[in-house]
Image 1 (cartoon, rainbow, N blue to C red):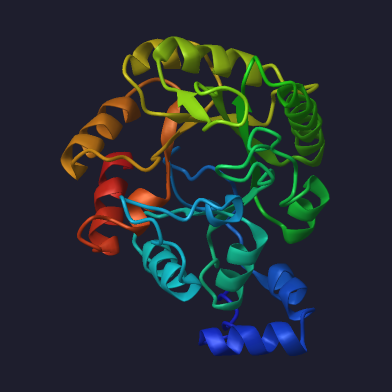
Image 2 (image 1 turned 30 degrees about the vertical axis):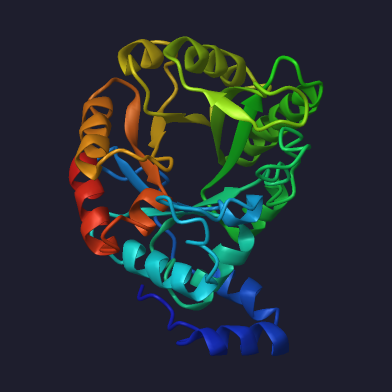
Length: 300
């Protein structure tokens, strides 16, 4: 079956269609050609992430305003998604639906981002409520998976609320047959209440976060992990038997050093691929296609 023709060719057409015919989004979701399964035949996944703006995180590669221009970001995403070996997208509804209307999600895996309420730099940053997709919305959109950020601060009472909501979402996803992807961190505010949130990227802290989150929900049958690449990744990956994707983050090292760390971690048991956003969408030389091709070569 051939893919349906895109409903929109330009960004102006996207805006016009949204204004005049919002139900077109649901029709496009229903008509979108899906892959037969979440995991490809080779058992590896290469996903591009674009859910950072919804949390107010707009900087990339040392550029504070990198993600201010939505059309520029969509250009970069379309370029990335069109590269051979890229399996799909992780995004909030606004981004996913723009790309849907432009025809960029045909035959792609789509991971829906759920909790974006913990805005970057806010006093309530760790109160990361479900302000994005819910499980019925993921199912209605015919997407393949749902993702949550799980920052755990043992001194912040809001953490338990996040864990409760995440556990409930894990259970609901599993009952709907949807993959649930968890991105855990042990977090703290070194300057005290209201200060900047810092993720602890030591191996021991990542291991602790893995054990806490992989126990969420009434079943782990559909649970995947999304983990940072840190020192002693062998010890980190020994903490779980769940399939795991590595996150790219926003590294400040030279690209060659970043790629070398990814390559080493991708060889470990349980690691099934990469989910990378700003590192590939806003590379230092602005060559998105080349950055994506390099990442794909590491995954496959």
